[in-house]
View 1 (tube, protein in one colour):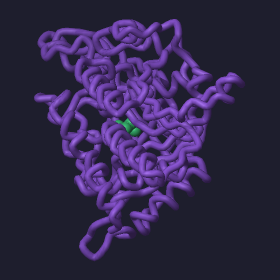
View 2 (cartoon, rainbow, N blue to C red; view 1 turned 135 degrees about the horizontal axis):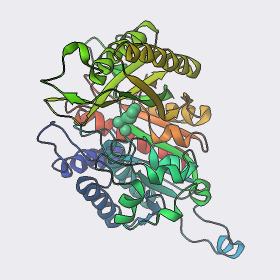
View 3 (tube, helix red, strand yellow; view 1 turned 180 degrees about the horizontal axis):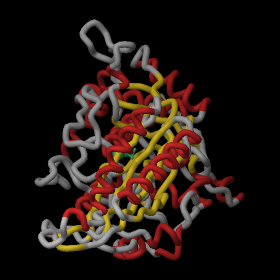
Length: 438
Ligand code: GLV
Ligand code: MN
Ligand code: MN
């Protein structure tokens, strides 16, 4: 290892102390892991932590109209830019991720991308100070709100708002489980709901977006990539994101008394919903490459001695071919209608969000692969089944991603795990990639 690299090792490894500093925030004693829904006290604490870390590094921190936090490393002001009225931040290199989590999620999904961005910045700033890095453009770290859609139901809400992929009126009317609208939640943290929506200035400032993320499957640990000790490479470059969407199936029946209603006299939407769960599983399993999941089901009113009057069931369906995803949902809807009719119930399908399959920008992906190869020879290209803000932004700007090895592949669970050395290696790959792109 060269002197310069040895000197950088503590800066790169700082990703782990940054992660350790937030390890107690938003722990969920009931579910295990972390529950950090957007704009909850836990997520706000993390956002404050990020602002403090960025500010202490001399970055200029701003929150935009859609709730995205930007920490800017500007270029020194240039007289001719100012005279020409040019935006010195236009076409910047941006990295970052999110700080919200799914209910009972792991520590790395989102925060690893933010912590590695801060640590990579330290490395880049030191390289610039040493005269080995000459930047041509501004740099920013971005933190996106509601990536998981855990509170308001639509994933990647911040990036959807910025790009106009969601109508702001629809976004503002989304409700969390307590009935609070996104408009109310946004107002409560000082945002102006009327100012939300597609943001041309923000988009013009993203020249390229690179997101580092924990790998959320066993991609890096498949036999194809593992060495004799069964260990895969620490980092992969992302190739694509599986198309995915969320739908609500609302089964309606007759609410009634659990003791006095004969088994033959019932129109119980819980029975219809339960059979639909099984049908969704078998329909997904019958389609190669598909995923179909029911992770949330809500009986109304929800009492032990009450036959429900309605059961809402949320399903998540994913496939690389968007036409197959659409066909699967149609098939499931038809099955649900048959099942509901047999139980004397009704059913209604509502699409809550849909994201087409994304192939990351080819030239940015090649650049990420070339930079990563310097520290991780043989870093593979991996497709992912998980959604990301980089996927939504890809409709507007070149985006790419790096994935850090996850030994078990488990994610959206308290068991999600990344080894310190792999987080450090991921940060090194990110820093090198950012340097090459700057
Ligand atoms: C987000 O992580 C998703 O893939 O749903
Ligand atoms: Mn994520
Ligand atoms: Mn996630």
